Image 1 (cartoon, rainbow, N blue to C red):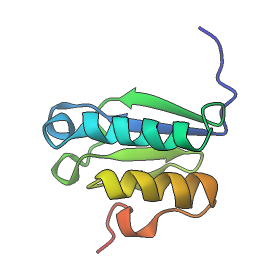
Image 2 (tube, one colour):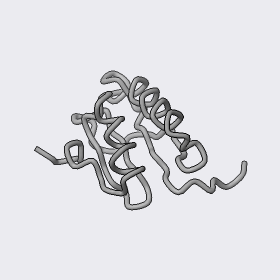
Image 3 (cartoon, one colour):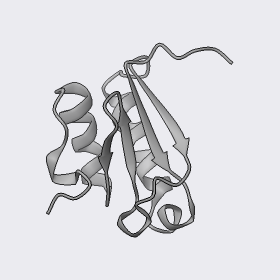
Image 4 (spheres, rainbow, N blue to C red):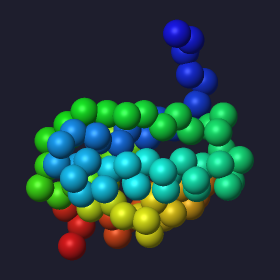
Length: 99
């Protein structure tokens, strides 16, 4: 197993609660957005375990910076890639704890 040279790592929780709330669709949405923008070498998408925010899932954490997103849906996947990965600013509407 080699080391990733990706600039960003996106961890998508696939624990029970997040799976029941659509983690597979979140994964697919992020993957689609990454491919559409040609970011495959810049972003590593990782299946993750529990992120301890179960009741707010599906949950995603972006590194570097350990930026935590919760309640991620299709619109959020687009915003995370456009705003955070491409634009360099976290997608504030989807941050954990955002109202």
